[in-house]
Amino acid sequence: MTRATVITDASFCADTRSAGWAAWIKGDDGLSIQRSGTFNMPPASSLEAETWAAANGVFLAVSAGARVILLQTDCMTVVHGVQKKGRQAPKIWRKNLKMALETLPYAVDLQLSARHVKGHTRDGAPRSWVNRWCDKHARRAMKEQRRSAA
Image (cartoon, rainbow, N blue to C red; front, side, top):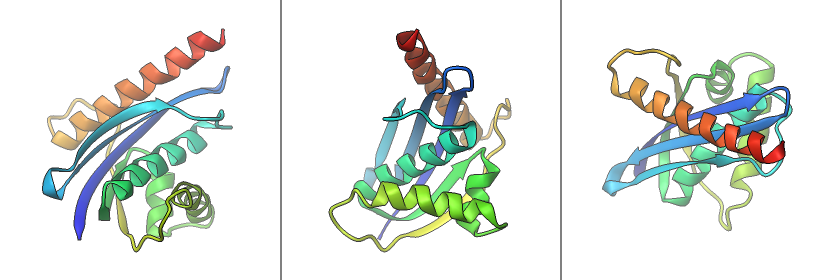
């Protein structure tokens, strides 16, 4: 069973509802994906953008064959959603992940766990470096969408 680590981030402009996302995926068997972009429709909030970004990252990993996924994000709502903590977070997360995975042409037996990565830090940990990469590319996509909407 292919294992993967998925690190995601989103960037959201409340004034224009422009948003970008990025995902960095590394896994067994040489699995390596770095992707960023914008969403098909504008998210209502930064929280929605973060959950969509995480769902996109998981979708990409599953599409590439991963079935055991460690999702790392700076969004605690996503982490709590995966860990089934609290009342609202799991509902929001399940809804967004379900929407993403329903587009697959097959059912998926997925083992998913999550871990918080502190965002906007300068520590030397590799996952912090990747979080900064995701933040940079998500912000770039959001700014391009904002410019094209103006």
